[in-house]
Length: 150
Image 1 (tube, helix red, strand yellow):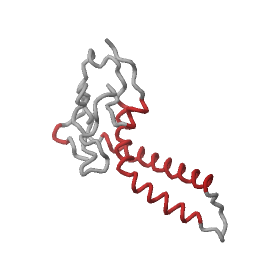
Image 2: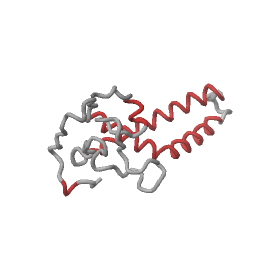
Image 3: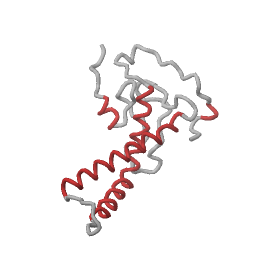
Image 4: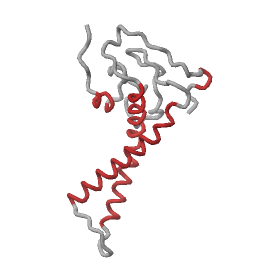
């Protein structure tokens, strides 16, 4: 019996497998524990491999950069609306925004790194609501000796 389709956004925010949207992608639940970016080799629920090819996660640098810029833009808009930053020689509130936003960005970096990996994986592995009936195709370009070499 097929399950109802789970939310894509919720599965990304909770670090779930993009194929079944149930299994956890990372070994540890918290982004702030040691080795928090360690991923399961396969999804615990559906068996989807998380390493699709050698060097697969190199592209997450771009995703992490885009997420960081989004955080900076959102913090600037919030700062502008709440405090009202102006661009003048006599007003240095912009420096307070910079310090605050860079501190926020530094604190959110582990979360953004994990989210960028889950997003990247979800763009290449599609959701399958009948994942129990469909077999997984093993990735063709995986070299076992090169796994976890990033």
